[in-house]
Every structure is written in C-alpha cells, then in structure tokens.
Length: 124
Image (tube, rainbow, N blue to C red; front, side, top):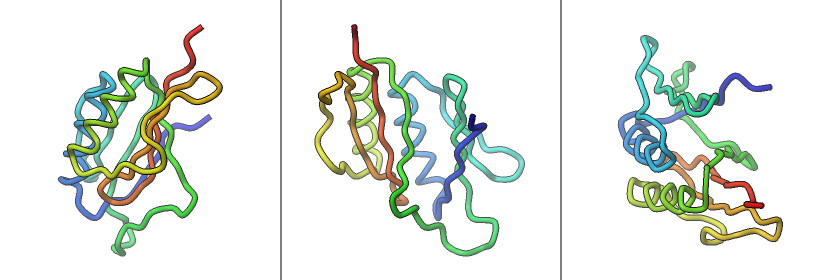
C-alpha cells in the first residue's frame, strides 16, 4: 500500500548516525543521500526517507504517530534497541519484550523525537 515513509529532521548527520546503526542491527545497509539532500533507507521492500522540511521551518514530530519496522527475530529487535539507544535514541514505553500474541517488540524515539517500534512476528 505505501511506497515510503518520509520524516523530517533538523540534523541529517545526527539522523544518519542513528538510522545507519539501527538499520545495520536489522541487517540493513547504511542510508544514501539522494540528489535532493534526503537520506534514504531501503530494506526488505520498504523505504524510509529523512529530510529537512522543504518549507524551511523546523521539523516536528507527529503527535500519536508511530513508525513500525519489521524484524526477523527477537534478537534483531534487541540489537535494534541497543543500537538505537547507543546512537542518540531514547528508550520509551516498556523495555523490549514479548507481547501476549507472541510478537517481540521494542520502542524508541529517534534523536528528533519520532516514535519508532520494531517487531518480530511470533514463532510458531
């Protein structure tokens, strides 16, 4: 349904540091800067793009918004969470944990304040 998710950042180098580390923890590659100055992360068919707002105003976070990212395993979720907190992210909500439905999840805010979650599907 979606082609990509675009979020704003006030500091693209700080965002690159955070997202390069967290995507590497999931088995992804570092972001690439396109000709328009946007960071682009492509992983397992999805794209996350990070840019300075085109209207010139400061980037702000979505109130109530969460970006969900798939992980292959609980170990990837834990690695993502550790990489994120080591690279400027803030742990939020509960610690990484298994949910009643068997999925394993973790939550962070990136250095700009965007709320992220990574989830691995239940093993059967």
